[in-house]
Length: 105
Picture 1 (cartoon, one colour):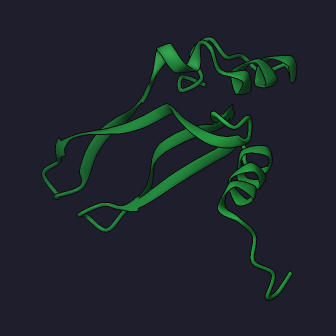
Picture 2 (picture 1 turned 135 degrees about the vertical axis):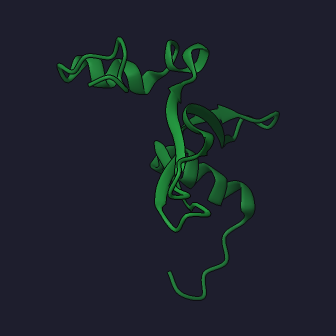
Picture 3 (picture 1 turned 180 degrees about the vertical axis):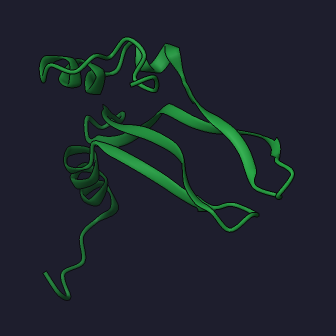
């Protein structure tokens, strides 16, 4: 596909149909690399009926401060209102995994 220029709506449709989850990793001030957010990519139709990606946050790392050695403290939280309605949650459950409190297992 080198040299092929695709219109933006087509690229958005490809993304919306091909990518399901995005993990955001960040280097924290103490040098650790940590996943700080997990979002689901849900296809959504625009006014012209074309698919475009809609990003829905599911989990987020919330910083709580630093310990005595300067390491970042925090915890992952589940964004309940989006996790409860997530198609990804249903897919995970059908695969036989518990989805009640996914960060506890």
